[in-house]
Image (cartoon, rainbow, N blue to C red):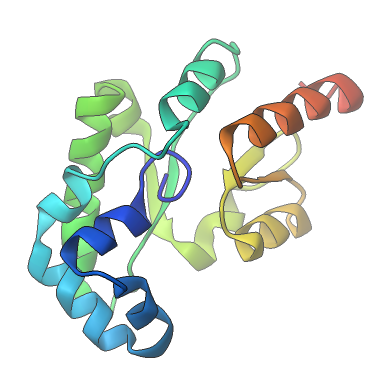
Length: 162
C-alpha cells in the first residue's frame, strides 16, 4: 500500500522537509512526528503518482485482489494503532468497504507468511520481495506504474500461473 498506492514519503515530507532522513538516522524522532500527526497522517495520505492507474489495471484483471500492508512495530504502540485505523479509513474511502474489510495489516516481517504459489506481491521494498519469493510467491518490485504493469503482464504470459 505505502509506496505503491499511497505516497508515504510525500506524507512524511508534508510533516517536515527531509523527514525521511530521520527514518534512516533517528527512528525515534521520525516515529514521534508520525505519531503526533495522528490517524490523519495515514487516512489522508495522497495517492502515489500512477497509483490509481495501477489499481484500475489490477481491478479489471479479474484476479482476486487484497491489500497487504505493513504496520509500525508493536513497541510503537500509538503509531501502530493510528496506522491501522488510518489505513482502514483510507481503504474504505478510496477503494471501498470490501477492500477495507479484507485488508491484511501486519508487521513487515510477517508479509511473507501470506506468500505461496500463484500469489503475487507488488511492493516497493526489495527485502519484502525477496522474502516473499523465498516463501514460494511471485514478487514484483514496484518502481513505477508502467514497469509494474509490464512485469505483471510478462508474469501472466510467461508463467501461466494464473
